[in-house]
Length: 241
Length: 258
Image (cartoon, rainbow over all chains, first blue to last red; front, side):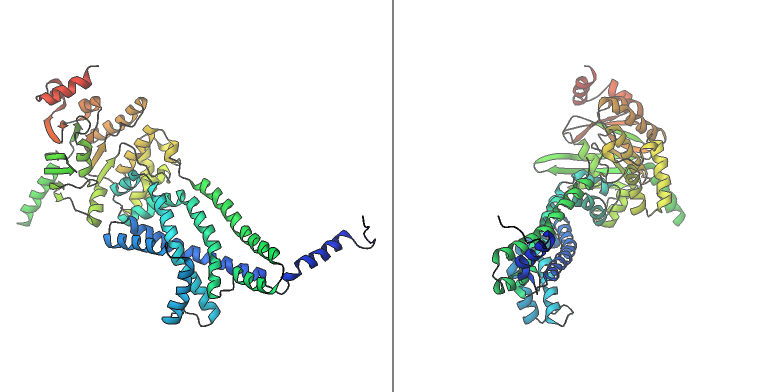
């Protein structure tokens, strides 16, 4: 066994090793890329929660036209590959129809288009998770709400949806985790998120397995706590019957 | 001229509160309500009894349009039942309903259950609504349970909260759809006592029940239904001691002596 030179400490050795193993990371804004991923996720999550809830309300509502629209939207959108939707936002909405969502530089336009595409797509899944949640609310709850004179929207807003959301926390967590990973599709229109950076690094660096591992780890770091925290929340807010 | 018509309305209003005229309803091939004519006067307590599947629950639920009808007319306090929308919601607020399965809002506390309709439908301010809710909970003997959730209460307690929730809307009439059928035997009386008290206070009540004791002691009139028809109507004493129809005799012989 080779002896270590006396003046070198373990700490300095570690630092040196880190330099050698991780020097391929130098010059890349890893945190910045993941921050874009987080922003895409949070904005699309908020958007699809709102739009998905409206879709679910349409699908359980009494107006045939709205029910038809909700059903058609969900069945069309959830069956189109996300890549196609994201590409359409750029090629169709932006380049053909000149929709730029209020931005004027390429970077911001594409970021907003990606949020729009992710929202449109994820809403269909939020709608279905919520509708499953609505089905767990006993019909007597809505009847009692109607019986005291609440209107359809009040019944939904005050009695049915609050209970539906609580039982849909689990399915919605799955949707959120899927969304986090789906943001990588935004790379297709050049949004500078994690997958875009990974592609650049893979092209320029030799350490393919470490690169893949680091990005995989980055996503696990984002999604694992999401699952754990929301799992706890789901238990905490569950409606006891 | 105006005075005369006002006086006429007033007379009509004090007289007939709920009127059903030749009401028909089908569930697919089943003719569940057949030419139902029924008039309930203000302050009257009517108990509807009959075998399972005779249409008594359905009858009760058509009065606030939780069930639609195929033909006929239903009017409450002189106004025909609206088909849908805001007008229907307004009417439902005037008709209290108590369900077999309580149906308390599971995600809200007992107090919030009794306050919700007052605030969202009657537009009462929060303080007044809470005061009234607490007074009503006291009236049904549950003042100390206000902050609990429905699942923490016994069936009898839940049903009494449901009665308080309906009363909070100041209803003109109360519908009870088998209010004690889902209760353990020892909890039936606490609910019936609240209902007896309501009847004594002059509330107009339509009660679908299997509690013959309640029918005897609290009802002004018993309506006996079988196979979607009203077979017999009579004051309780007469109905229980001397039923006219064979169907009612048969029904009573099965439930009264065992």
